[in-house]
Image: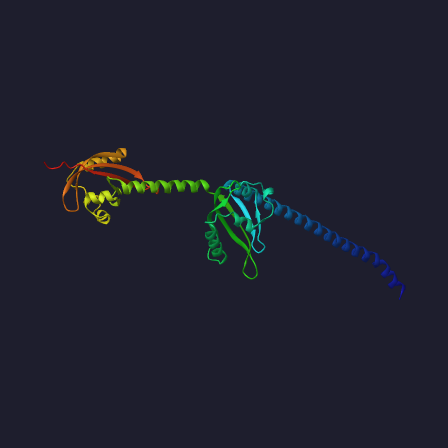
Length: 302
């Protein structure tokens, strides 16, 4: 080499080293910044996810508290059953008193008369015939009484072979509702017996004059069957020329009750004077109806 070449090479080396070092330092700084900012973003995302999960958990908790329902989770293949504190309290226990629970423990608490219905409903859900499992049944309380519950649930995880793996749901205490329905059925049965055994004729009619029911005494009074009375309707039983009946209807509309005498027709065409008591009422479905209590007051011919 010549002296000029060596001199030129010597003057370029520091400059090249400086540029290379600067580039390497820049790349290292950029790498560190990217790593740091990525970690910060990851931490921020994790914090947001954690906050969202906490918010969702609180929202679900508020829903459960607001609806006053107990929750359960059933691991179908192992039979393990997870129950919450509200479920234990509903049955008269503390959660710690129950200890580990299996589905057999729950089954043993079912009312014997409800076992078949619950089992059949559950199997239909497992076969995919229903989207949800829903059944009303009774569970034995700690003190021995029976608690009516509305049981709802759904399989959320299935095995690879199509068998149910995880199922969760809720229990709602509906004992008060069942008691009210029982009282209503008892009241309806008592009324039916009174309706059928009354010595007075009784008709149940709609505001348009159609007749829904007639008791045996009414059939004997009009000498018609119940179907014939229904076919005739109110207009076919009351003398259309008797203005007193329209006055009674007007009074009943104003006060809900009216009482008086009207002329009515029997099935054989004969007429009779009838003492009529008319009462308006609403059915459980909110429909307006009226009851007509009838008594033959025709004076015997001397």
